[in-house]
Image: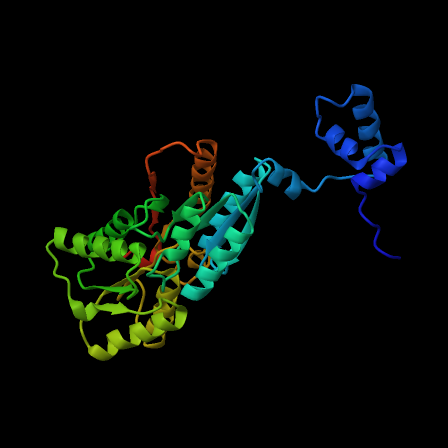
Length: 342
């Protein structure tokens, strides 16, 4: 069987013997259309299962009721959970989301933002790609009057709203925990890209060491893309350098799992010989052997905070509002991988 054609206002007009413009006005509750005609039109619309084009209706009201989301990837629990928080909050307000991925590629991110602008979304919510250093595509959205909000990875020089966690404080607390557990030679895995989250995680690590009178050994700091294989490779480099280390704190859960695998291959016990801690609270960290200490980035509350900020901006569009930055507290989770004594 062929697909049933969607009913239109012309079908209602033909059924009632009136013009399509009269049907349109009746459906939109125009004051010049009589109550009797409105009743007939609405009854006919129900009979033939007419449904208005919600996008067209929204555009007539000056809004598309669409929110564009740009994330590096949805293949991470953190980003998918932030999107869930945004989507749940938006759906309750009859908004829908368009989810896009930049894959940490500047050109893809630029093309995606341009496409969202062309799609007439009511707002764009972004977590910056690792390779993004120029922001003209975001300025284009701002110039078009589209509310723009960054979350997690932010463009620090743009005067727009931001929602982040306190990466510095979380990193400080995790490093402090390692020190209090008796670890003294703590290596750190980080990213070489100058993105706010990685800078803040390194700063927290460094200042915790300094606070407790421990020196920062540059030989114990390794930069990579922080993926699983990068963790294995970084752990091998530490072992090959023969520099004493008794703990590793990584800015990513993925690379710390790689380190765990590599250390086990060499017969190194965790946490007795080396303590391990990551960042992100990916679901697998609870099921490794031993379970890994990590930082939960409160992803769903972050998504809800981003969505709320967007709707606040939407309601106050045209007003001069101060640029808002929301800093959420994260949860530092201590598990068996760092429990040397406790």
